[in-house]
Length: 485
Image (cartoon, rainbow, N blue to C red):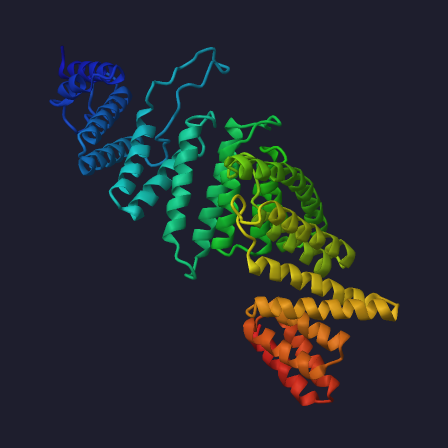
């Protein structure tokens, strides 16, 4: 037997031991084999390269089992470098063999382990395990990029989903709040989410009514939170998020969570009609959910059962429902100019709070609604009454709406003194409804101090100055507003 034949014989025998879980015999078999590639083999140079990579991956896995992680990582790195150099820079390192019969009438079956893929995957995970997040990210990106164009696209799909999730998580934790995020990092995160959706679509279809795809919902959570983290608010970036959310909607069955994200993103994108449709569907689903929750609350209080997962993985918390109602109220009033719809929505929220708190007064099952949420509901209810006062032709109705608006807006300011919207809406009502220029000026100045970049309160201040015939002051306010915004 020639040296080349002996080499291949030992590697093949080691693979048999490896696949049968006889790792001690496998270790013994490969211990005498070199860790350098013999490219001058007389048998089959291409096959010898794959034998070398299989040898090195088995050696690395055995080192991992011996808890020698640093040497295992070094082994994978060395193997991939030698293997890649031998193939050339333009060659694909990972080539799945299970391609089926195709047009050639032949078929090549995949091994239990695709050795190049295994080496790429384990090298990246080991770098992260060793605390080297920088190289770990680079190596995880290398793994994902090598497998982006493999055929069939379902090859190692579940592993790639986990790897991509880990990549996105590591990227996320490396970003600091308030730090500058480069366009390259933004693009990398957006591409990562596109990859995740494409992979999820290879293994999931539209679910049954009783089926929830947890991984799809997690991707919706991750995508939406990442867009907020990297401040991806441009029109093109919002459009990318919308495309991802519509893809997740196609893989879920009437998910209120996805609809909530869609509504918020559509509002930011400026498609208020579609946002209204998403909100309407969302409210139908959460009304149905809350009807069941009220029954569960009664049962939980009487027998101590758990509410937390009573509605499944896709249930909405009361806080999320109320936050969505507040965004919907702002949508109806500010963008759609439908004050009656806004008022109806706020009544729905207040009735929901009263109903839940009457059934669970001690908040044993459902957490107490925060004062901030109640203040914001009062804010938009007060703003609605202010708009209705302006539209009313009946003196008594106008007075009633104005009185209700002032009461609610003062309450909102007391409960949330740092709220720009509360001070701004109060300034509007004092200026238009009460004709109290002095008080309106004070409220508008407070709003400007809280958020000088928003122009609405500056505009009110300028108009109040012109009402006093102080045109120089109004001009100065406009100049300052343009600089601040």
